[in-house]
Length: 229
Image 1 (tube, rainbow, N blue to C red):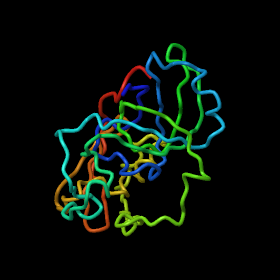
Image 2 (spheres, rainbow, N blue to C red):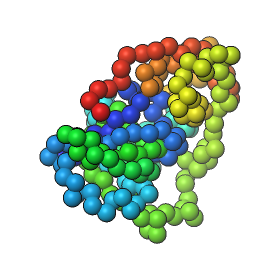
Image 3 (cartoon, rainbow, N blue to C red):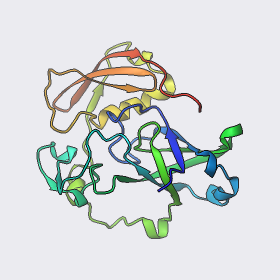
């Protein structure tokens, strides 16, 4: 398959990337590869509010696949069949995400770029295809969610010590709070004394979790996430 585009956002690593699309309203930009910077290929896309992204799990630390995996939302200790999950360790490491199309803009030599929100992809993830989301066929409100539906309302209470949230740019505060409420820890790690950390939007964020309460312990500036967009 050919890579047609890459996505750019504030998630330089897998840690803290939303576990599913649409959970966090974080913005991203999609830039097409030179061969696919053809404006006519996007004709009509502006009429859709949402699009499907088919993409590649390009940053896997191990190769191959297993017939069963441990979903994070089941605590990381219960195994389920790989085809009953959205685990990246699959025979073909392809991801599928529905995102909201915010708009399109002309960016000089980059051509037409797409502005989206709600993506669960890390920065520079390769995109294999883009398709419009059709609510009359793609939406099934009556569908059963299997074991994933049992934990869909899971969320932590997020606490910022006085003055710490002010270190975060104002337009990033709600997004960061949403990310933390989704519990970015690996499913098998539940040590209340451990300090976890991740990079987001040029910041290094540190936190601890005790039960249902997440407390941010430190926020510092980090290096530039990406360049060229």
